[in-house]
Length: 324
Ligand SMILES: Nc1ncnc2c1ncn2[C@@H]1O[C@H](COP(=O)(O)OP(=O)(O)OP(=O)(O)O)[C@@H](O)[C@H]1O
Ligand SMILES: [Mg+2]
Image (cartoon, rainbow, N blue to C red; front, top):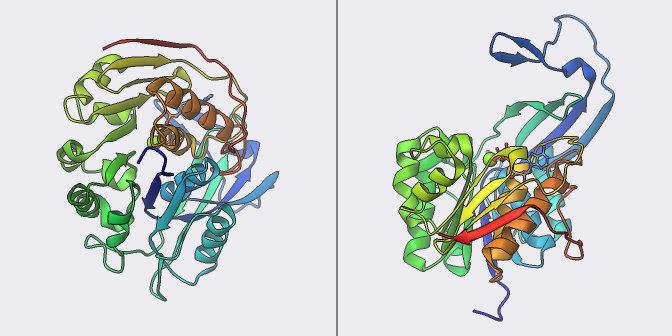
């Protein structure tokens, strides 16, 4: 195991993303809610348009590939333009896609992302059409062949399909990293019941507060450790806290960059962590790379263009490590 390149399988929906940038999407606050206002019946000028692909499982696959791991992406896709684009992107990155089940009835997701001047965004998402709770057409033997499985954003499969994948991984001795997305977070009770089968769990602060008690990042991490051996809780530009049960790391901001588009920040962070952790790097080294990867991603439009390559030079960052 030590000398072998780890193999990671990512499972989940993929999308074609079209990014439109304009100051017309700048925030307007009404009470506690922040809106972007689009007047009806007018044609508005958009300054920039960028085409990219996304979807959590496809984004993280690219981090793993660029970091030299063996990586496979598995899902159900169709023959629509978005599915074609997603597969082309992954092929170019060297992500194996031979087990993607392509059928006429399936369709990749399609998102239009409205970016405001401050980098915040509103996403108009069509989920596409994909497999359901039973994971029909997915080849579960792929899980047995991998060292790690990273399922995220399983569309209609939701938390029940997540359970099937995690159970299969547990039976096969395949490790599981979870960075749950919308469909899984919608069922916090079921998500929590999965945790004892998870090896690395990464969520943001608000998400962790849906699962365990705690106000501070440290409280949340410590409570998470009752279920999962490695817990990472992020808090946007405020940094992260993580523990592997031996030490606890508090990291600040890697670099104070100008945020162009925060799409994919969470994916880059979580996959950045696993890309190092799976190779046997320390908690601290894995957190530094995760932070560098996500910081780079927010400086580019799209979830993938900023993902770091193998030759990327890292620097020190504000970070404290103490025994747990
Ligand atoms: N404004 C920023 N400047 C620098 N780095 C950032 C910024 N926002 C996020 N990051 C980096 O991205 C990491 C993950 O961000 P965040 O905690 O917002 O995750 P998330 O809420 O899961 O994101 P997502 O919405 O993509 O799922 C942070 O820990 C940090 O390293
Ligand atoms: Mg997230």
